Amino acid sequence: MAIANPVKFFQEVRAEVSKVVWPTRREVVLTTIMVFILASIAAIFFSLVDMAIRVGLTGVLDYFGG
Image (cartoon, rainbow, N blue to C red):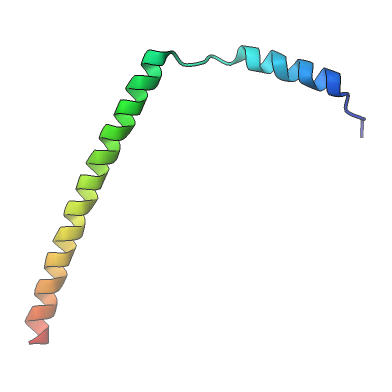
């Protein structure tokens, strides 16, 4: 196993970081908005599913429970 050269390592890290394409401010804002919208839609969907299951289960238990 070769001994790592710290100077070479940091040169390679710097070279790789320079290849990264960073998002623009507009892209970050739009992506953030989309995440909030989709998270809200998912929350509403799962709340409705939870309510439907609760109503159905309560109806079944009331019917058979007495």
